[in-house]
Amino acid sequence: MEAVPRPALTGTNLVNSEYSHACQNAKNCYYTFWAFFTEDSQYTWAPLLSRQTFDSYVTDKSEQTYETLLSDRLYRVRFSYFTHDCLESSFLFDCVGCSYCFGCVNMRKQKYRLFNKQFFKEEYLKRMKYWDIGSYSRLDEAKKKFKEFYLSVPHRYADIVNSVNVIGDVIRDSKNCHMCFSALEDVYNCKYVYFAGLGTKDSYDISVAGDLSELLYEVSYTIRAQRVRFSSGVTNSIDIDYCDWARTSSNLFGCIALKNKQYCILNKQYDRSEYGVLISKIKKHMDEVPYIDAKGRTYKYGEFFPPELSAYAYNESHAFVWYPKAKSEALEDGLQWRDPSERKYNITLEPEKLSDHIRDVDDSILQEVIGCLHRGVCNHTCATAFRLTKEELIFYRDMQIALPRLCPSCRHAERIQWRNGFHLYKRKCMCSGTKSHATGAINKYENWIQHFHGAVACPNEFETTYAPHKPEIVYCDQCYKAEFL
Image (cartoon, rainbow, N blue to C red; front, top):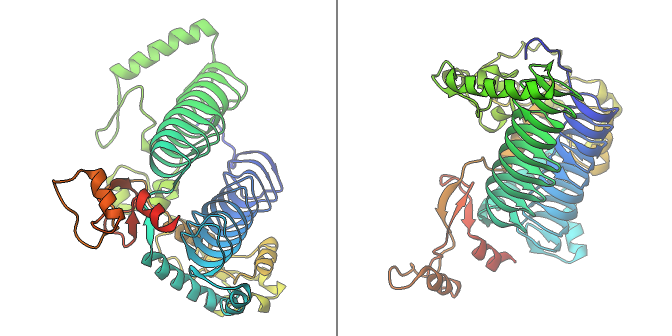
């Protein structure tokens, strides 16, 4: 791993896409990661089949969106989460088929609603003059009011749509998936998945994989592959073990950055019969003489690489974003830590000095080095400063959005706080009836029927990513549908 050269950034069919990594068929993208057939997007993680998607996380089949998360089929939508098939709206959570809505939660096929309240078109447009988010002060007020409203209404225990026999969160059009998180479109017979889709089948323990893949085990960042184990960054390959960045290859073991190869071990070529004999010996040796790390953990054949072999320190990894640790905690867990380089940016404009309204911002802002409002004291790998791109400024003006005061790293960290982590908690539905429910005399089904008629509290239990200490009101699927659908 240390001897073989690696590309600084990876991707396929990239056109004019600076500072973008692991993208497929991207054009005019900037500081974008894991884009898939996406154009004109910036500061975005996993935009799929989208155009002009800025500051977003896993947003697909959308155009002109800003600050969206785990949403799809949007047009001119801002600050929206778990939202689908919506247009010309802002501040939405778990909304479907809505247009011209602002600050809404749990709405379906609605129009001209403001914080879930219905208005005629003329009154809605009149009230929307106040909620002009081209102003930073008004935008900040809208964020606070939306968060308060979000906490005041019930939420579905999990974001599961058109799926059968699944347990997890953010699952769409999938079947037989357990402990899966972000399983999007035709994921079948999988377990322990974080972000997979587009025809992923019969796989286990995968992180960021899919696009017609099957029989994957303990892999990350792998697409269009079959029978891949304990590997990362594999594309269009078959029968790969313990490899990194294999491309259009087959029958590789312990190889790094090989392309169009087969029957290789540690990047050395063998013939087919010799390869089979050596692989059997290697697997036997791995079992008889396992690797033991500094924490005493044993690694035989069948386990992913130990963390100390990672090319990235913990605080440089995607895991740090979801589960931030202090340096002392990471080192105690046997994880690497790399202290960031000292940043000495010549900040020419403090965030407090930015114009309040986007209409008052002229092109000279493109020459400024803007300080981040967090000033590096957060735990978000803050860059402490940032600059605006020309395309970004044009986008803010067109969408009438106030300039950000945070650097891209801090914006990303705050954005993903809208989704829960990847642990499931057993909880009870929080929908209560007019009196406490009976116990013992009636079964669960009869109890729920009584609850539906307002007699008892809902008896349903479920597994959810909403932790018990969190303030959200959490409903089971039946109660959620009864109240909102």
